[in-house]
View 1 (spheres, rainbow, N blue to C red):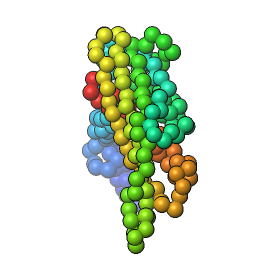
View 2: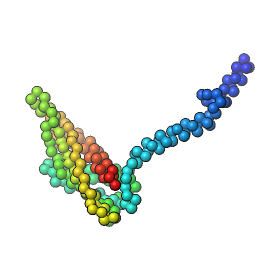
View 3: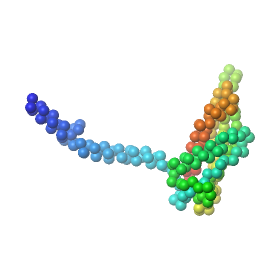
View 4: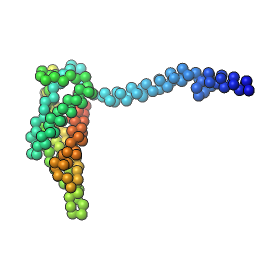
Length: 187
């Protein structure tokens, strides 16, 4: 009985899973393996390209020149873009004299039929288009222009007002992501 207790004690002290491997060796090995994995994840999250000399940004409220105007979309889109840029870059928002000045225009806000079932409209599609201009006041480069367009399907049983209420969060989030990716992927 005494021999079994001593053997178990020696096995526990010599390694966690394999005899001869100490706990500290196992911990160091796991750490060396996992650090590159987590570092890689964070690198992808922060994969934003901004010229080194750019420190400040101003995002103006978007103008709405679409045929149909959703009055809530313009300020929500500008505000959400501002929040995303502040949270995912090192740029500081300012009200004037910014290194980058971002302005935008909602150019399209149209509804079309997207599906027909039994000779009836089954679903509609809301298409939203936004044009973005980035003026680089720091380096004096030519302004960059981008166009973004996203579509959002909704049931034909809903009115446009009902669909806008249901789709609003998705519209703002998806358009903001698309604009952000266009702005920061080409610098």
